[in-house]
Length: 286
Image 1 (tube, helix red, strand yellow):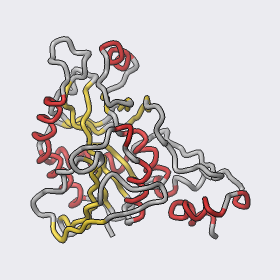
Image 2 (cartoon, rainbow, N blue to C red; image 1 turned 90 degrees about the vertical axis):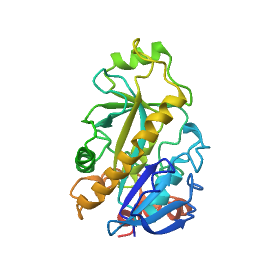
Image 3 (spheres, rainbow, N blue to C red; image 1 turned 180 degrees about the horizontal axis):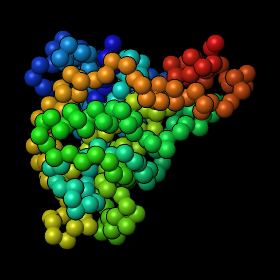
């Protein structure tokens, strides 16, 4: 089973050296994931790739079934997830073409399903540190080996999209101390924590958002240009990560639900227990 999952663009898995490729069509209690999951062998390890916006990028950030995506990867045995995404920079020193591995997350989205827990089962998950520090360190090292400019740390604000920011919004986010801005990291990171999976982001800076008066206004064309340029960097970083990935997880992510479940087990509806078994059976069936 793959222990590492990569969520990003559909072109990520088209990399040299990926062998024994299989396509997994997974159905979850929360519906279908964005696309079939591609599982292949890279440097002797099984890795799962999921196109976040679907094949051909046809799913808007607000329409992504984040719960199905995370649950599907969990059902395949994935323990660690690296989200690869575009972002705008809210700092002068985070330049287009750079990569950021953030350590904090600000959820500014609206209307998205943010939790697996509903239907009579309540959990209050701890996300004070929303990204796995161990996996973040390993990803940062993997990117450094490529020679790319990488920044460790910074707050990532997720906005609803699909539109880009106004200048007033962009300036406000800078005043709040945010470092980068994107549209998909929330609730992806929070759902991964509920699923007791390690999660981090390799964020590719494509622009200065719209706060920077000396730069061109952000456009889709500009974003795609930077992402295409950075695809090989992302692929090489994933390969480096696979080579150095620690076999055992020593972080707190694998026990994230241990102190989060609050509902009396006798009060949980049977249908909910069945649906959530993959996540909670180890705590509720003892």
